[in-house]
Amino acid sequence: MINRTVKSLGLALTLLAASVSLYAKNNVVVIATGGTIAGAGASSTNSATYTAAKVPVDALINAVPQIKDLANVSGVQALQIASESITDKELLSLARQVNDLVKKPSVNGIVITHGSDTLEETAFFLNLVIHTDKPIVLVGSMRPSTALSADGPLNLYSAVALASSDEAKNKGVLVLMNDSIFAARDVTKGINIHTNAFVSQWGALGTVVEKKPYWFRNTLKRHTTSSEFNIEHIKGDQLPVVQIVYGSDSMIPDAYVAYAKAGTKAIVNAGTGNGSVASYIVPTLKQLHDEQGIQIIRSSRVAQGFVLRNAEQPDDKYGWVAAHDLNPQKARLLAALALTKTTDANEIQRMFWQY
Ligand code: ASP
Image (cartoon, rainbow, N blue to C red; front, side, top):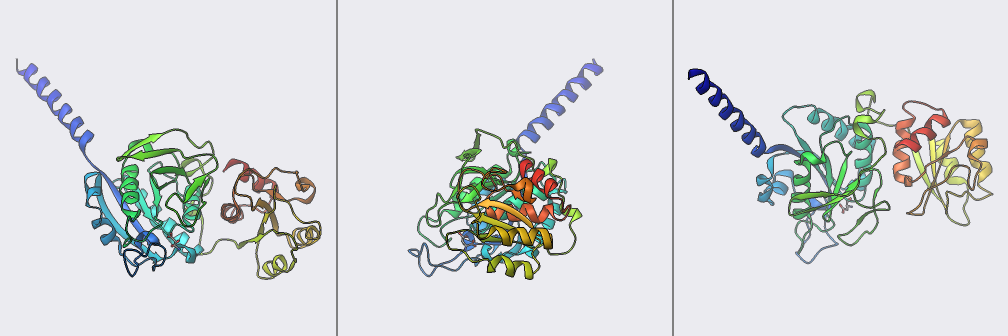
């Protein structure tokens, strides 16, 4: 009799614990960095002329009290700048803060509010260097917080919903904009004026509707837990210098030469079409590669498609690298991280296939 009572008491306690954990809210840290989502304009009709990075993190969180129903939310003000002014220094310091936070057992997910201009870069960088399966979600807005129909509040609400969802685990760093969930590696800012500004040529991973994420695909590329890059292995506050040169007709070689003089270790050529390089530019790139050891990464100024190795230029013969489907700004970051590990162009090419 006593035995039976003890057993049913035990069962009741287990059920209670299970239902508490089922309904317990996850802990989400909102890391604010500035951008338009924290922007303020002179009046509510100023949707495009305003100052970015004005509103502090607590005000951002308090402006959307509904997020407290989704998760236990705390705020950290990591930066307060417009994202076009982010350099390696801010990127590395943000990555280190995120890394420290995701290691804490009490943190279940991270939301990073960010300017939309270089949001894709920060997302991709974190996707490569943070080893965690916990959701990390970057979010921004296209209209400042003071504008009529500001898009920041709902974006933030959906981002917190996503970061507190167990289904968002181990999917790589995510970007939430305008209801869509994107993979950090292939999302890009495709329109600079409308709220549906973010696109991926391979499509969104899913969408958030009324706080529920719906998933449609996964990325097959290496990220976070399966990445060979690790923020803990990167010292100092600068990455190897990598710069981009934009391709067009009637180019002059001076930009390439100037970057070489300034100490760049790799040049991402945002070439025309399939990463093409003008015949009269090829000798300059060959010389920089062969005589100065500068890596030449062939990317494309075309927003969709991908650069094929040995098409348009003989990459095997020249020892150049094809950026595959990474756009020039993402190729720049992967090349910089690659150069923290190797100067072998074949190894760098392998990384461009895998990430
Ligand atoms: N220039 C702003 C930024 O990137 C634009 C934005 O956030 O939408 O910080």
